[in-house]
Length: 264
Ligand code: IPD
Image (cartoon, rainbow, N blue to C red):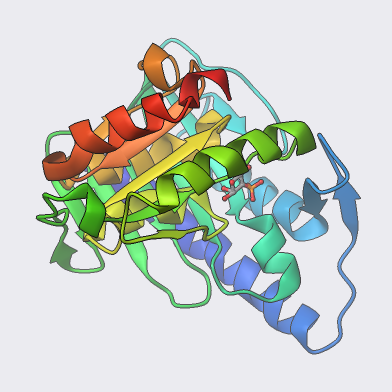
């Protein structure tokens, strides 16, 4: 609980910084933008400022504990490591779409034990403690009771490399005829939280980084989702992240595997 409280408190503060910058940007303020792995993979000055704030607060509250962050890098340490995405959904942030979040998780030996995902625009706070449940603001979360794939709402994500996106698009095209519908929200942490809340029945993406899933996957799992992390499901591809309500998990996994997920 201490770790969860720390993650939540700092994520709320960073979310405030991000929201202030977003409001300023929407009223015409300039934000410096760079590109990363591809021209479409962007980072803004606000991502960097948010991560700097998180690192400074962690150093004050939990001195000496390593931090692995999307913008500043780092590595997992022996005890608690803090895994930080200072803005998950940077492209949404830049376009004015309100679906982005600050994500902070505490991991031990690479396993998330506490986490918080805070949405700057709505103010929603998603939190979880390993073995202690998942929460949205004051409410306990639990996944949907979905038990039919053909009536399931499924979130998908696409990585930044263009040829790979095309293969992921084919996989999505194959799936869309087998489910109720598909969503692509543009923030992996929020997709995982949506599974936790029953706003999605399942979610699938290749190529996420640890900071994208560290808090959200714990929140989904603690809400009762079946969660598979990168390296855990060869039939879906070594870098697959999968979360689903238990009633459709096996069917969705099989549909993705049959659609060629492992080859993407
Ligand atoms: C991205 C978002 C997006 C997902 C990408 C991630 P970022 O994170 O979560 O939904 O499809 O794979 O990289 O770059 O905005 O922190």
